[in-house]
Image (cartoon, rainbow, N blue to C red; front, top):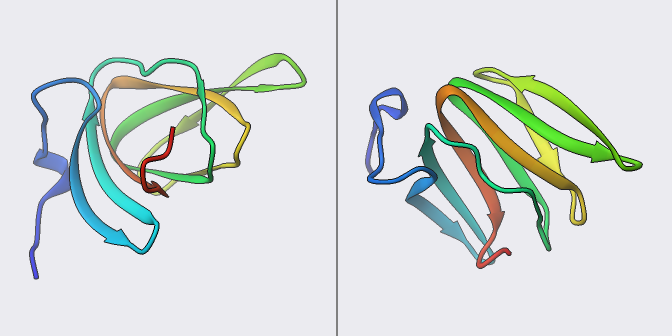
Length: 103
């Protein structure tokens, strides 16, 4: 058993992750970042929960870019094939659950 304070977690680089758990084919990671990620499409589902800070989640619907502000407690469920990119405001700690070795 372990306990950690997500609000004080940092990493040595943007989007650095602390692996928290693995369940069969899924991973649970705590990410810290102060930089945007890159536009990408996952090959499996992803659950994205902001624990500290805020994130502007950019995504596309029918080729049109949209933005949703995620604050602590707000959950984003990304389906396979959804193009998206996360922009922290100004930094954030994010819990991500996704398929192991997801691309």
